[in-house]
Length: 171
Image 1 (tube, helix red, strand yellow):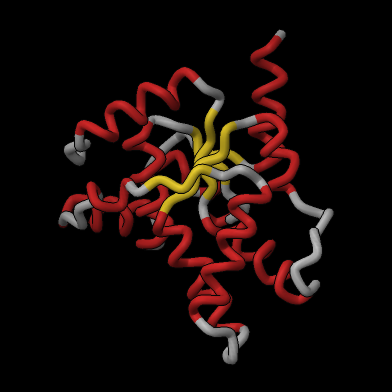
Image 2 (cartoon, rainbow, N blue to C red; image 1 turned 60 degrees about the horizontal axis):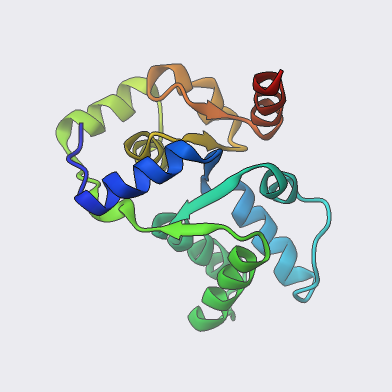
């Protein structure tokens, strides 16, 4: 397991007391594209909104990188600074906490082999490692990742499954 810096141990303790989930980039990238096309108007058909009503949402600098990169690939004329502003607007809209555990991620041979054996892409593996290190559930909209979760990190859920789990636990 990756060594966790002391500030992350404090974060981990806080997140264990809250109903916290880590969002990978799949829904955020989709929402960011809709947001840009709609000229920064609020997009209502969004699963992130319902998650934000029920959970403390976490994201990471790695997700920020993926969202900004995806926007700039699809919208070639979009300046880097504008893509950063769009990401910040979305984070603020849904009160998503952006954490920086990426500093503790080490790409070891063991990690790379685990990704390969699990049929998990490297980027997805990094998201799984971040959520595993923080000991929080991860929400993804990536069907391939959901199908392979048992082989890497079990606490991976779809939007619908995490909502069902929340209300099942309350009973």
